[in-house]
Image (cartoon, rainbow, N blue to C red; front, side, top):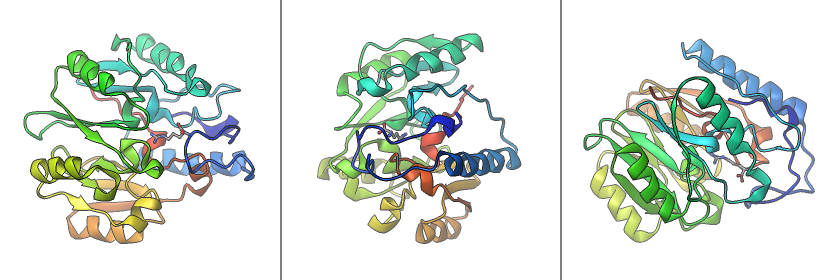
Length: 261
Ligand code: ARG
């Protein structure tokens, strides 16, 4: 995770960002800190990246890389405003002894990649259409030796996979079908017949931008119906308020890069 100390909306690279709307970085830090404490309270270990002035989106740590079984596939951001973030993530992984594979294709890390270790023997789901390029999906498959299923995102409000779909345990997902092309919706229905489906209101409240440890699902507090559905499916929803970061176009999952040993 990376503190939103320097969080701001200075440019607009997704439909949620409005450069004229005021942003309270102090409040963002408070809310982000609650998220960090929530993860610690659930028994998880949290490493921190040092936020850098001039990189206002650095709080969205999920975009910096994608890690599967100890191998890190680095990010290459689509927009130049975020390009320098990739080096900070790379330095973290190299300092901590992870096997790092540098990308040569545009991809925004966990923003557009999800991993299901027990689905079909280990499956990567990947989004394209707005940020990550299809060539990045192929590159991820070669880097990580896992099959990659490409899914096409069609609604600019769901510009990353992780605002439209999330893994809720090692083999199942929750998603909002309307974010995907008709063909990709069929692919998801075929691969995940037992998936939990979110409605448009919960999806637009960033409810799908969640992290789950397989038992506890940490999600945006506004997505109340989705929390109910997850509870009915046997998970424990853990709501967190992250309203300030919504102004950058992100929520819970965007703030967290998962380290999969
Ligand atoms: N403002 C950031 C961008 O548009 C938000 C990134 C959100 N992160 C995510 N994993 N969806 O790139």
